[in-house]
Length: 443
Image 1: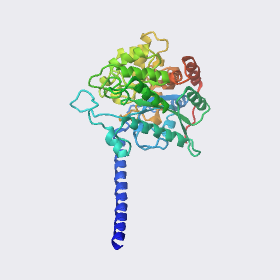
Image 2 (image 1 turned 30 degrees about the vertical axis):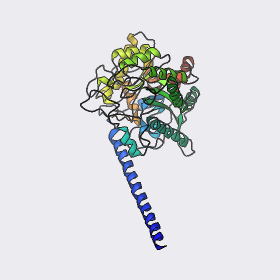
Image 3 (image 1 turned 90 degrees about the vertical axis):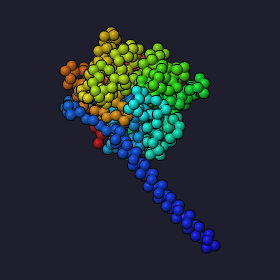
Image 4 (image 1 turned 135 degrees about the vertical axis):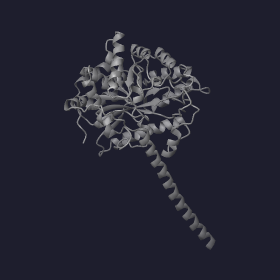
């Protein structure tokens, strides 16, 4: 009897101690994940950036602003609450007057060793220790992706509660996009979010059939994904990557995946794809597509890294086939000066004009790569700095060119490709944004 009581007390004490140790261990790991986030996602504000005037800010707030790429779901921050580190959350998007943000999902990012000239899928994965520190699923890439999808949907649901000042919406159809445009035109505090995959690494492969590939794409579509990039930083079952070790073109499973993505109503994102993959995909696609975040090789001064960026030949191919190029804000994409963001945009438009395309400005968009382990030169809450740059450069952008680049082109892209969309409706819907009223400044 006495021995049994002692055993019970001992077990209870061990349980309490175990819980205490576990909680503190988990809290320590969570703290480390936050420190890693701070380290990987700083801002690098350029002291030469202009200070926006009242006129710059007023024009900025009159636009429908859309961005094609942010990796925020990778990090353990609450989208609905302001964070004092990292790049993106709903309060800061509202301050920057962002109406539509593509939230891209990263599942694997191997180390690029200094002695290697390429990124290999077999190298240690930087995401795995981060996921361990965050307490997220670690071992299956598909599960990693769907965890982030559900995390976004949870934020969407919570934003609908009465005490939430800004609504976050999942945009999965043209009807959703049309409602977002209408509500923004009425001055409502609502932000649209589109889910994107950055690297479909678990799709296809030697053991997969064509039916398996289609089923994987349908599963992503049913979960709400509306932008699909076959590759990220390494060669996979769908295509080679522009940082990969072999850099081959589209595989047969890659062709099936991209064709089915279009059939379902997903925008295809060709960021990170190999040059041969880019050419294979453009020959295959029938709908408009994008390069969600990139720089260019022209005048690519250090720390700009040309291998990751588009050549002039790449740009010609993209614009001649209806593609949109999302220009990034980080130095490896554009170089050391924030003013280079507009220069890169202008270079793309100059190539489109030289190709006698009717609307050169229709091929450029914003592709920040916020929260992508980069150091952007513009804060999301102060995007009016970029508006000021477009108005004050030696050759200022026409206001309608700026409206195209800052959001109308992305509106047309998704209004064309999403379920229920077509080019005529896209032009009609997004033309309204020429007269968008200034959005209220959030409290």
